[in-house]
Length: 495
Ligand SMILES: *Cc1c(COP(=O)(O)O)cnc(C)c1O
Image (cartoon, rainbow, N blue to C red; front, side, top):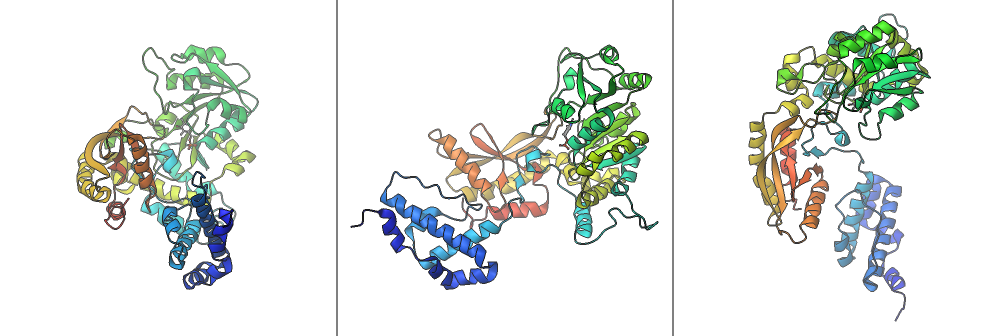
């Protein structure tokens, strides 16, 4: 008649050493090493002890440590303290602990270039290029002709010059870094003029005024939120002015009574006053996307032709490549940027440069870009093709869900994402999955449904709208992905 339920439970639990000796657990040790298995055994015994305690004192809550994988069912453990079950759960714990945290998911949110889901998918050519240089030595900073030291920019600068018409180009870790580096190089302890209508926050804490401060620049706001004229810039230019900055309004739109200074006029003004004109394009499509039926997005070539001295843009937005930040334009300014010691702290690694070089090379054949560049393939996918996929996959999901939820095919609109206008929508189709139990507790049922989709071996990320999970199938574009998606919902894998 013990008064201590924990002590009672503990006497019934096997010792760590005993568990390590069980045949299936010993096999795990041979496979994964003693440390990893020992950790899993200890965690499992602690979980079982907590469960027993919980049963003795029902109101107590268990806060077991979170598991990376869904494959451990704590309820099942409580009912079966036998060797086989415990060994299986230990195996699952070892697997979960070893599984990489960063992994593939299906982006069915309807936002194509989703920053939280890794933005642009890379083409096969980029993956090959990464594999080539990743496994061994490469000519990263080595000139094979002269046998002397080279510059890592050499691998992409010729492509960037050719594709934008710029005299020079350099690449850093991302566009935020590119902008920071440009400002710090050209305008440290000096003034930078920006329209009040362009003082943006991109997301993830990227706010223009803060970037300015970190670059040691003095921000000078000109004009008003909705209207900024050329004269506003002209009046604000002083001997302390280092540059004029224009920022592409990425993720919002100013509508109604609006005015912005014309880029050509701004460039002429900057030139007359002897200060550089810098344009942050954000997405920066390298070709006119209108040729593929998409909304036109300003290109670096256009910005340079309008008179920009430097243009910055991202590698993993509409360009469809790896995360990177491009600076293209005047050779003297690019040279100054290369010499800034901060450049060293922001440089790209060889994997990025390999991928970027391969993606830029695809632009030599612009007609076939949507064939080769998955980001463009996703963006230009015909709605009819997406609808056909939805009709093929709806029954598969319905079979998996059984009576717990209903599935229907609905017309939706995808967003381009990553700083393309949210008003530019692409017609698409989705599987609309709604929990069966009507109004009562439907919010919780909906969350549970979304969570069960996230727990699949390849997590499926949709969006919740009007009491249902919407799975926009635009980005499930390859035959391989469709096969893998089907496999997730095969009868052997119920929710
Ligand atoms: C996205 C964006 C950035 C930031 O680019 P990253 O590559 O994400 O660092 C900067 N400016 C504009 C206008 C953008 O749209």
